Length: 249
Ligand code: ATP
Ligand code: BTN
Image (spheres, rainbow, N blue to C red):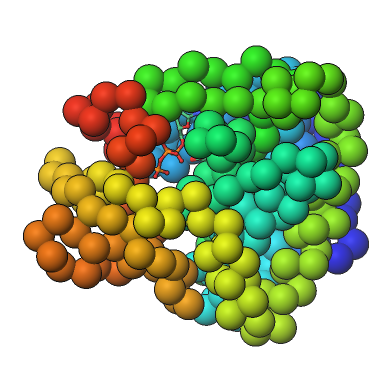
């Protein structure tokens, strides 16, 4: 992939900026900002994006729509690969977060327009102070490594790994992608709370990640359910500070 980087100092959200230009620019355009004043996570949650972190969005135009459910995974896998280049072991909290020792270091937000474009927004705590969230702890590369990291170097490395995973995606090698996500599954065998979006939640145990990208969970009532990532929010029992905190939708 030939990447073309647009570097901005401050933006509302790189995903919003990318959406505005997506239809007029070639695939491979990357919007990178030093600061986001309205960084977003899933369900419109706030994503803390001060100077010192890496906040960027990549515009892709995959030829087939059926690859879309796996796009979030290639973002998370690229982050995990690059963390390992720095000697850090990242794990994927299905479907879109990357954790180090159960602390959140990065998040991926995929948005798009059917038959037109897909935007992979990636946020990584590099040298910034990570936020203390109500729900669980966050961490940065600097905190883990005890030194400042060159942000642009992290970006370049991620784009390199993203090219690799994107080439697997567009050549139909979905099984290779899910196999790697399975290997890096932070929740394997763990107790989780599944929030259904209608105000209800249940506890269960994570069994596996399926080839279609869904998460197989054994609920307390004995039912096995395959969770699709647009529908649920998960909290790991161990990392949760207070199980009664309901995520804002
Ligand atoms: P799920 O995606 O399963 O609903 P989640 O808690 O990871 O769970 P997301 O929407 O993926 O939710 O991420 C948004 C959350 O990430 C915010 O509510 C906040 O708690 C946390 N957060 C915000 N900014 C950062 C940051 N820079 N680093 C780490 N965590 C952050
Ligand atoms: C999440 O964990 O819910 C995903 C967080 C995604 C954050 C990145 S930072 C770059 C891009 N722009 C945004 O507003 N969000 C994503």
